[in-house]
Length: 67
Image 1: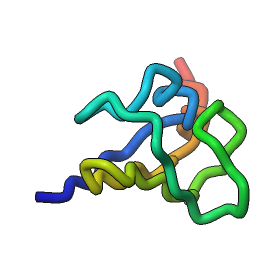
Image 2: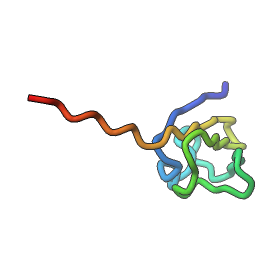
Image 3: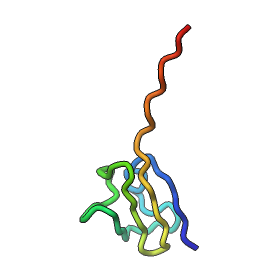
Image 4: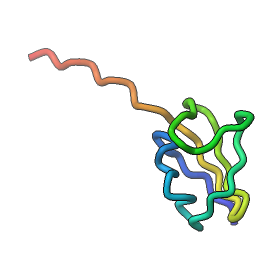
């Protein structure tokens, strides 16, 4: 069964797929590789176990609290 996993950065996949450990990728950006260079919204797909990773990007900064 395929999974969809949200990640903060494609650098999270430097050691391979989080499910099966493979390094066989397909991506929404031509020629992209999961080495931290992807933008939020990109989808990285493991061709071995069919897991899809969606790059969420960095969270928006929290507003300062007034005291």
